[in-house]
Image (tube, rainbow, N blue to C red; front, top):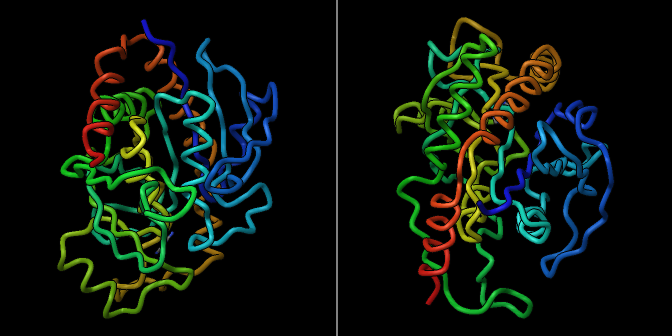
Length: 273
Ligand code: ADE
């Protein structure tokens, strides 16, 4: 069996997981620049794991300034086969309530100024042009494991959902929020794109645990999203997210991933012209 390694990208509020795996810290540099944080390496349930803080250890990197290419490339450099991430998000649906989790299966890209390919045609970029298929951006097997893990931990979760990723750092207007609902998006955040795209480009299986913190601003009977409420809800749910990730890694350890790893690599290599 091929050795597996799970990269965990902790979004806003998720520093706590370090408690589980801190064994060694690696300060890496990549051809695309430095990742947002040092990599915290160690083991969970006998599996090699690596933690990266998307917004930096001090949470001082705003979404548009996250070096997504360096983050994903750094995880590739240390041999990650899987990436599980958390992402704080607003709900665009009545039934998706703050405190719930959504296991994303689709995205809509509403970002405006991000480097979303390793094959950008600039000096230092990977050579060629990459047309990565994106019909199913999130790995189905890892998604299933996240669902199982949510069940084991009695977490209220939604089996699928479409994320609309906005550029930020501002939140949406009422008109935008209504538009995104009409487009069929389930939740809104600022980081899924280009993170998931880059993971696919480089052949790493990726799945996301979207942590619902608010109702954005489309709903007339509650207050519009604000930072204080987002942080309050996140703080309440960090332990739950850590538990879900921990159980997911236990479940990942039980499975033979050889075919999945091979398939992900093949898709990424055949996408390059
Ligand atoms: N992150 C958490 N809540 C959000 C929202 N309503 N819009 C964008 N990003 C978010």
